[in-house]
Length: 436
Ligand code: DLL
Image (cartoon, rainbow, N blue to C red):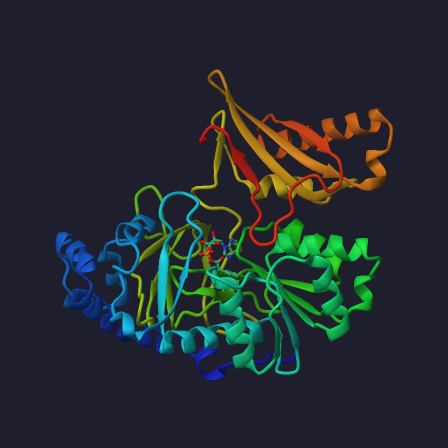
């Protein structure tokens, strides 16, 4: 397979060269942030560290972490390093709990972002000739606009579909001949359902590759999406605090991990309990330092995403480290009667069971002192009209599979097709009533 790069020189740079760029950029960043952002300076002073103490990349570990609360405490613009006149765009998280987090970009930041996003698109095999259907939400969420500028930078044709109105999206895909689909994996399934309802065979469309991210999705979900949409499904990772989509992207060669744009985003894996940096290959919490951002650089941001880093060379020739698919966050781990459960593990069990649709929700409650977990999952049209005994057996089977694989007893409730709320962006998989 011929690999094509957005920026071959940098993407295939030997690691020594890459690391020297990273160090230079890191030193520059720390000096600038120390000088211009009071909350960063205060934290560094408390930790007894000065910019000149950063002599090698290993010294990164001496710097204090940044967490989401730091952004909230400095809401809205307190961590920006440039005057607001220099900021050409802001994005914000929805802020389901407390204040939203706000991030800002200079014109150069937008240019960098477009470049890393174009790199991600190339990594997934997209070219100038592609018709790229962008169903990430446009607005304060970074997905839509972030991907959009990358598509234009690549020179491909952008279809700014945004989320929602699935039938119209399918019609557009068919009529415009969309070749690449960008959306959350849960919305991709939603689109597959709409296609089915419209009696459109995915094979009759021109979709070749999907670039799915913004939420955890299991390998079994990948197979499901590939089958239902007749495309190759690749994973894209990013977060607004660091940039937005395009921080990392799977290539078409590896089956292990996404290449991180390491010349812009410096990754570490830490032990979430102790904060200690873990050796390469170990699993832990992903931490990022931005190396080139102007308006809103961030130092050692704790993402809460669980991953690991692979430094082994990749068959595609890219030397940039790969991060393992993120299937859980330190804060979405459910503890059910002492057993740790990630929603993606439940997903892994459900998807692939015949007669079960990949639409589910996990409801956690506390009865007395006991945590209970109920998994509601849709069954397929044909099965729901089947005998009650068939449904009972299926319920028992799923309960047993979950118990065997995750070690937790749960109640399974099979629900009618199309009753679980569909997502237009990020899916809500868990309702934790213990927290309400
Ligand atoms: O979700 C940016 C994005 C847009 C990424 C479009 C990819 C595609 P936030 O809204 O700030 O930004 O959410 C970031 O989403 O910390 C992860 O927990 C999760 N996430 C993002 N990509 C993936 C992925 C965007 N590929 C948070 N796999 C992150 C698993 C992901 N989780």
